[in-house]
Length: 458
Image 1: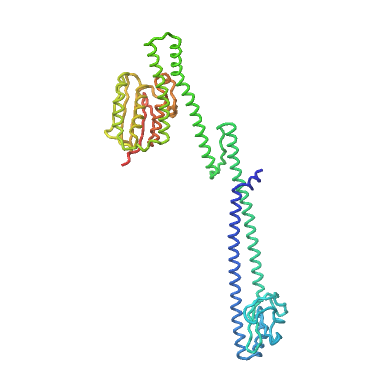
Image 2: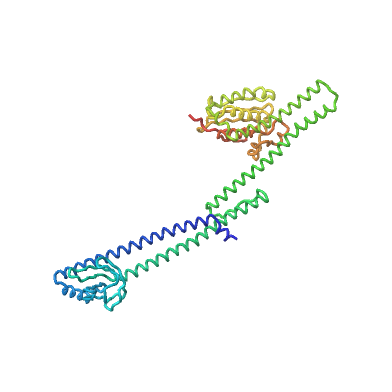
């Protein structure tokens, strides 16, 4: 099964293409080496033949046919010229001198030729491949001067055989390596596919196994596992949000139903009906406000409001928030104050920053200690800007710090206080849009929430 998938895989097809291209390149290199070697060897042989032909031609000019024949006989007897081929033929191709028994058939009367001659005893190399040059002398005789190139022919045959063997060996080894690599690739892909099928069948608890090789496949598996972790977290958040929505909407909807049922069965009363309708409208407004907050958070998280970014002063925005919530703080005898630097500049959306700071102050007043203190501080810190809201209430347990920014998440002690669990979610969305970092710290007692921004662009 794995072999069939290997042979059908795109990786194997690409490997075959690479092998074919590599084979062509190697073949071209060997062809170049072969023809370059052959050309060089023939050029050397041709130069030696040309020199010898000139020597014989000089002998003919000085001493005529007899002198030329004598020199040819001398050359044949000389072992230093054992690989040379000579033939002086008269009219009718009658042999006058030389170590060939007859004039080669099909050779031109003038120019370079290659032929296979009969193997006379005088041909020392014992092979018959000859390269020679021919010419017709002034008296009508024909002269052939050449060399036995049988050794060259054998050498080139060995090069051809070696080249073919090397190319075939490389192709075979490359094919085996390609199959091995492809099988490994297909195996890793099948592992990912198997895990994907298991996830579809049994849920998001499965993870792609890592081989510990830290190669690209392990990196892909790690990223996919991180993606699955993120999906599992989001699915858990969706489930938690659904449960929180059901919990938070049950109370106002139950109240509305109870009022309407009471009004349905009770005698008509103008003042009572008006109060009931007013309370029902207030509950509906709370529900609608909850959905408006969800829409606003989604809009912020999709980065749809970055066009409104400007350089703003956090101190001015915080001052407006403190002024707005001053009356609410007085109602619960909480002292609300603004402290810090006179100017703290950041780049951002003024309205969103106002909403984020307002939510932090609102939470601090609601969940702080009655008669306590809420302090809003704006500072320039380490090349950036920080706004902090501190209260002296019960605070948030450290294990809950990350969870309170999820939508509709509320601590148990906050379930029966006004709110819908979306305030800190909006703060987190605004901070993310502005590239800010949120820090929750123990204020001993109470909670300290810090928004840390980068310095404003100038």
